[in-house]
Every structure is written in structure tokens, then in C-alpha cells.
Image 1: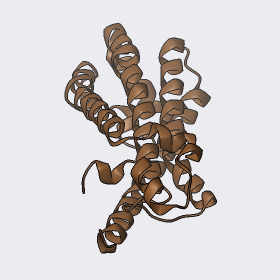
Image 2: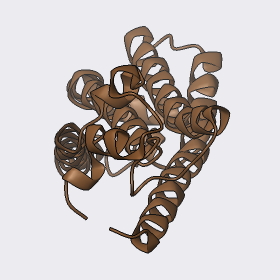
Image 3: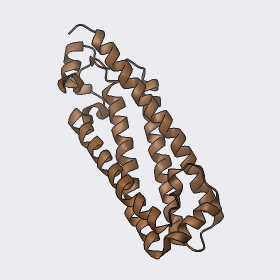
Image 4: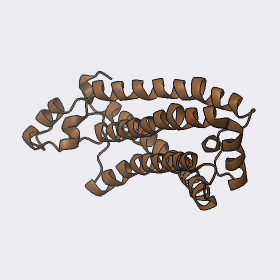
Length: 208
């Protein structure tokens, strides 16, 4: 598959089914180069979080795992983690970890939506033909995943700001957001993977 095989304009022109001037705004924004750049940012942020900030925070917390990396968690464990971090660790957790993790959630959500849009273009060879409603549903997965991740980070950051008077309800809400994030990650990544696989399989069968 070439980069041209993923770009929109040539296929709209060949298909005759849609005027390039009427290309949906989302499709006009999506290009292989932009998708590649977004995935590069996602990879860089993942490396920073998993190889730099998370190990440092574990060390400061005496080996305790970060709450958001283990699914749902009791309020007591979140409190114990915050307490073990100390002032330095809580500052690092808020600004050196949750902030970049929020950027990761936003960029990753955008990248996944762009991939869905790219592989559901009308008239593209490597594209899955779906209705507007189905396309919206496929795009909703990554958006909800990103929203849950951002909500989780906002609640945990609020817990750090309120420390040591962090309300139990706030930490319980953060735990619920973490559970939702992991569940939605399966939905989002599974949906995107299925779309790409189906689009490539169908495109490979079409005559050049």
C-alpha cells in the first residue's frame, strides 16, 4: 500500500461518486503524514510515561503501583499512594505525569479517529464502505476512550491539589473513570483494528 493509496483526492476523482469540493471536512484534514506524525507523538509520550515518569513515581512511592495503571482501585490504596509520594512525588505526579498523560490521551484519540476516517473514505480503494451512522459510531469509540482518560487524569489531579483533604468521593470517581478508560480502550482499539484489517482485505481484492 502506498501513501497515495490512503490519500483522499485521487479516489474521489476516480470513483465519480463524490465531488472533491464536497469532501467532508474531516476527510480533508486526514492525511497519512498527519496520522504518522500523531502516532509518532503517541509513541514518544508512551516511552516517556512508561520508561521515565512511572518508574520514578514508583520509586518515590516505595514501589507502589500508579493507581491508573491497574484498573479500579480502592480509595484507601489511592490515599496510600498519594501519601507515600511525598511533596516531591505529588508535584511530579501532577505536572510530570498526569499532564503529559492528558496530552497522550488527546493525541491518541485524534490519531485513532483519523485512522478510522482514512479507512472509511468514500471511493478510496483501501476503505470500508459504511453508512454515516456506522462511521459516527466507529469514531465515537476513540472519542469516548480519550474522554474517559482525560476525566480520570482531571480527577486524580484534583485529588493531588486537595491533598491531604482529598474527598473519598473524588477518588472513587477517579477509580470509576479508570475502569471506564480501560474498557473503552478495548472497544476503541478493537474497532480501529477491525476497520483497518477489513479495509485492507477488501482493497487488496479490487483491481488496480
